[in-house]
Amino acid sequence: MSTAPQVAASHTLAEPDHPAVGVATGLLNSYVPGARFLGTPTRTLLGEGVHSEVPHDERPPALRVAATLAAARAAGHTAPLVMGAIPFDQDAPAALAVPAVLHTAPPLTADPLVALPADPPSRTDLTVHQEPAPEQYAASVAAAVERMWKGEFSKVVLARTLRIDATDPFDVAAMLQRLARRDPSGYTFALPTGPDRTLLGASPELLVSRQGSRVVANPLAGSVPRSDDLAEDVRRAAALLESAKDLHEHAVVVNAVEESLARYCTDLTVPVRPTLVRTATMWHLSTTVTGRLRSLDTAALELACALHPTPAVCGTPTDTARRVIRESEGFDRGFFTGMVGWGDADGDGEWVVTIRCAEAEPTSLRLYAGAGVVAASEPEAETAETAAKFRTFLGAVGARL
Image (cartoon, helix red, strand yellow):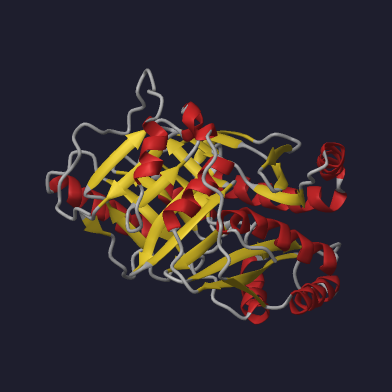
């Protein structure tokens, strides 16, 4: 893979007027581990090599990214763009870089070839470890609910992990193919986070995007597993729209997003009631919040960092929820429930909540899933919800709980 500081001059962020069949899936097919891939509802990006890395220091991520992009442009890079991931803890080291060569295409949904199925997984050498065990996770949920009834806090998002070990190396490119082709309208990513380590997944949740002065956020909170039976699937979706517990959980997140964006935006539009978003495995309550920036000096990543962490991935009050997470989960979230995305030197970008994901090393995978816990939560139901969320990635691996 090239690491020379060069730019593919024939590729820009502008979307072509007549998208060619096979352009977006061509980038998907060209991905190899070590490259940077992002598929969003607006574009498909493939970054190769490293022009410059975003350093880790005491400055906020948005300032470090802005300085890196400005330096790249000053060095002759005609259209520098940062791609990568920021951890749940924004003070921890991120994995952000300006690619040496950037290839762009329309979104995967604009390419009819994305409907072609990926090769199914055929692994027989996999061992799955649940960490913590389901019973232990349920006990943590019950303990959090008890504390909420005592008035300590109102919501916390508790996560658990799966570790999948294999005797032969995982095919990261094949897993990315399955994720992208299963949910092409979502946000699919494969990004290097260390030597021989890749963060990949298919998130349904846009944290925030900026294009010119237009800002869009799409918080998701309140969810239910889908059913293979059509009638039952429709019943679950309808019940979710009427669930007092889920509607309250969703409203808390939307209110937090509106409050954060109000500091930066005018003409905020917040629908009164949520709609539904579906993935291959889950129904989610969804609200699309839109607004106009007061100042074009505010980059997409600055907005994302102001929003993060929303109550959808942490809880409320935020500081208390963070403490409960540290006390209850027993593992470092790392990049899980952080954000992945891209940002350019003009301040435009898309940043997505890092969920439905895993970190892959040659012969091991670490999967993550969480559930929003409120006073009305039932431990067994929240445990089942995390199991359903694992299905997104388990299907790409060929493993089962």
